[in-house]
Image (cartoon, rainbow, N blue to C red):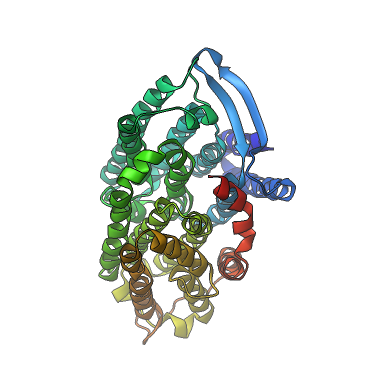
Length: 474
């Protein structure tokens, strides 16, 4: 079934290119089928620390490279994130993609296959292969369907991520050469490879830089706001909702178990960078006039808190990262879809040109405020559980850093509620007086997101129970 999860979107991606008139339908069908497979895997999954549903075949035996896939509780959470959000992202087009639609949906499916590969790979070389593969389709999506200055902005994004990946590749090859006996890329062999503190330190930074760029963590974040703003909405959803979790997953799956001594050595520094990013991005979000750009900076703040919680090396921080990855993905996809609706109907992202939408579109305003409250961690919503656990875990490491990182709750409420005030409250103007309320097509996307905001807030153990044993083992 894990192999099917990988192959189905890959095959569907090829079929999309061969059938130009049915690209969206094929992409939707494949993503829904992958969601069904994820549900079946979850039903059969035994919530322990073992890797299940695995396949392991030699690929390049002479070099110790195997085609090794498997699912544990950590992987399963990320599979739910990927395959749960993909159908919503496929539907969220608002008819903005009018040219080369088959290529567009083919690239989305190729990216889904690469993401599944990243989250299930148990071989270092295979992980790197899928890591790089995920960059190609999103690069094409941003380059061909992006907005103004897309070539310059997408090139910057490509150079950033490729540079980080090349540094990681050098580190991975060096690590492979340190494995005992006949060298191997197998994850368990890499886990058990003895390294000196100096070796760990060099390798730690090689891997951390690659993961920090993808997340992104301050000061390696400068590609993100421009890319999120310029990319087509579905591309932005892929980047923010799912792709940045590749970096978080890499920290959990590869960084923590392989370089524990180096992490202890540099723990305070890397957590400090995460916390600086939380406050820095939140403050910049407050002064934004462009709603889509504001969401981009808010994402940096949320991811900074997730990174700090993970690197605190506490059970609460790691478990908090699991549910917050899901919650952030749900919320940010919802917010970017709200932004797309606004842009589609008002032809602008500038919040100062809006106002009074609640009076003419009450259902839209209701969906908007619920997703917004999830994003600012209102109790009983999905964002609260994750942020509480993350700050709790960080507090166990350093109470001062936890207090500073906790400002994300206050600052997040400031920029999100001010944005809602500017967009939905007050009097209507010539731009918003004819704003249409939520259509049935919009509701198909917004209702599941609203349901998830409350479901994960009220029943967080749906996620926490899946990952608990694997996190304890880690």
